[in-house]
Length: 468
Image (tube, rainbow, N blue to C red; front, top):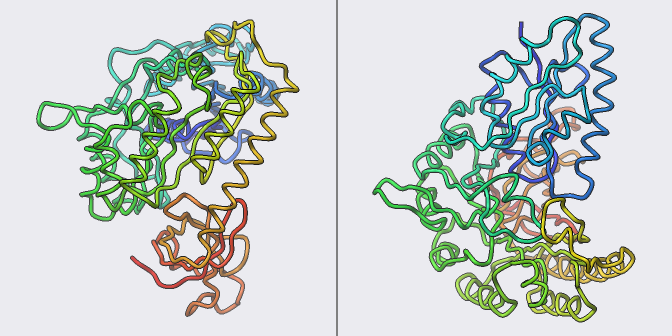
């Protein structure tokens, strides 16, 4: 009899990839994915430690699951609760003490051992015990990628994430990634290309390459050397049927010329780059241990735009970092005005336990952080709307991924990662005989679209023609 697993994913795109791979690992052992925790035999909470109060949200969810687990126990049925990801890595032993309902805690480097953990938990579930206790947050000598299944037969969709690099050696003073994901590790080029080919065979048209510091990639190549991210993109570009390649998240220190040239020379390399800067103040950048200055960042932007004039940029900003003065914040606003981002993510600084910045004596008052964040977001939103409005009247290629809310409407992404609503109601046979079912023959295809309207977060377009 098959069992069911429900995986709730918090946080970053890498966690989305990890959750899919956990499902892959469990599938040969009889586990099918469930849409809800209520009918699942195993519930996995795949956590993220970047956002504020991340652990508290997990404990709240565990409290709800505990009630369901106790009800199942009175009926003689088992339910297992596992916590995975970065919160698990950082706070594993404490979580086991604080939440007795947890059966398993596993770090992001050990989920390939899930079947063994489940077996151990099942063996311990004796004598009416509500929970077993399995903790595995070690950094293994052998990489998890060597043990993951190579069958992506359950994958559905036209766009996919593919992890190529994990960990970070930068040690920014606000970040927990080096402690939860470990040192930088890059997968071999052949393994990545093989996985990409399998995804394309399943209908994937766009792949986003993932890494905590993705442009630090230095995977082994077939010649006994190592390839940079630019070299890897060139190899992936040879895959027939792979129309689009993206990557995230990058660090300015690792933006080498080969990668800049890839944006110029490789058509499948999308003209969109997420390049976090965090602050526009040299003093704060130094306190963050970012290892670059604002002028060095500007120089990188100049090189990129010289290579690809239509390149759209995105970034991350932290407001109210310890010691940030009014002038430091004004320097950030000045940087934003000079670069003009198509999209951006901005947050108030919140301490992450165990990081150097968390113990600083120069914490910025909460009301000051809030006021600065509002001003920054207003400017970023202004630039995003300006960028979107600049698309009106242009034709661009859009990858249609799913149905829109209206009949005859499909939703996709532009080369610049903008959300585009495309009306296909006027296309031949756009609706079925009943007139209420969207025509889906364009689904999963690249189409040529003319942009007719722009809003702050999305575009509207009319279908010109299909491209594939």
